[in-house]
Length: 95
Image (tube, one colour):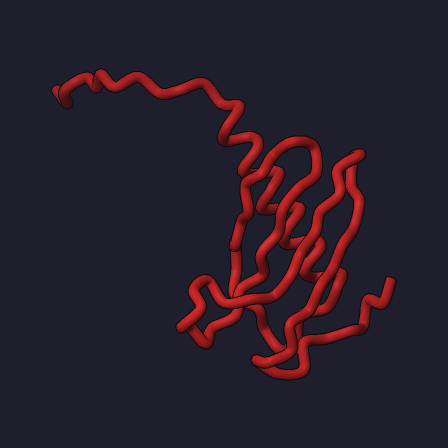
């Protein structure tokens, strides 16, 4: 684990992989679309989930530890929102 490794420039496509709670997170820096110059942290999670997520823009001062913490925070929030009961479409009018 190289916690002090940083993105040195916009052209530096970083890769990062780590395991948390028996899930492997595979992360990389890449543009959201081929024609864009802004780089985002993309990640996917092992376990049959084929979704890829791009939760935040890559910054020059990103370290492995800071990215890991941001991705875990994002993903745990994502899971808790998915597990929450669906809200009712009916709203009571204000009295």
